[in-house]
Length: 244
Image 1: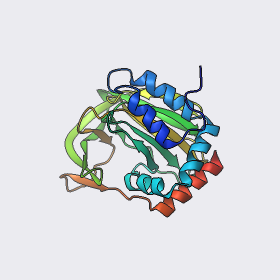
Image 2: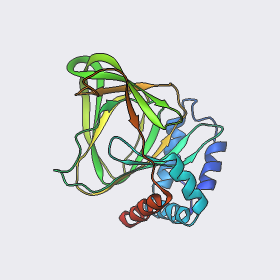
Image 3: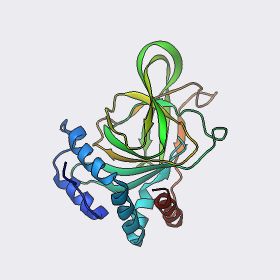
């Protein structure tokens, strides 16, 4: 298969994604897979990050739309689409010993389909379905004010059955439908990083299932996001370069 990108800058990636056709027409898996597979090559990713670090304006734009996720990783939104409403992201987990790692993230679905490539590390992935099984606290998860914070509206309880479980190693590329309930957990001590191409939003909210309630008082919970400064972003990308 021919290499889609070679020593490419973020604006060129963005132009390609804007002109590749609508990513919400059922062909996201094929098109996104080609983009992610090409960019996920370590020499290509190093070049892309290195060139981004040299552009202060681009760093400021990325920092303004990125944040430290409640599931203990840094979500870096590298580029966003106008016509196709896609997002190209890096997710970065810092090294943590087993005793320091947070528990498995909440079971959740998404508001969009996505394709991801594991650049570094590995994680344990599980998928679930609504069926008789373990009981969870169910919440409707909705972004508020351009992702400044997220609301968690209690929806009662629900039972889920685990469908599958696997260790996902570096080099894996896969596509996930927005409706799939899933969770991941770190499975090693070193750094982990993924490249994600998110498709257009197909619904306003999604589902979260927790083993414990957000609040003993009930009501709608709120999760505020913390954004990295430009200096923090520069340090994070510089560190990622070393790991790659």
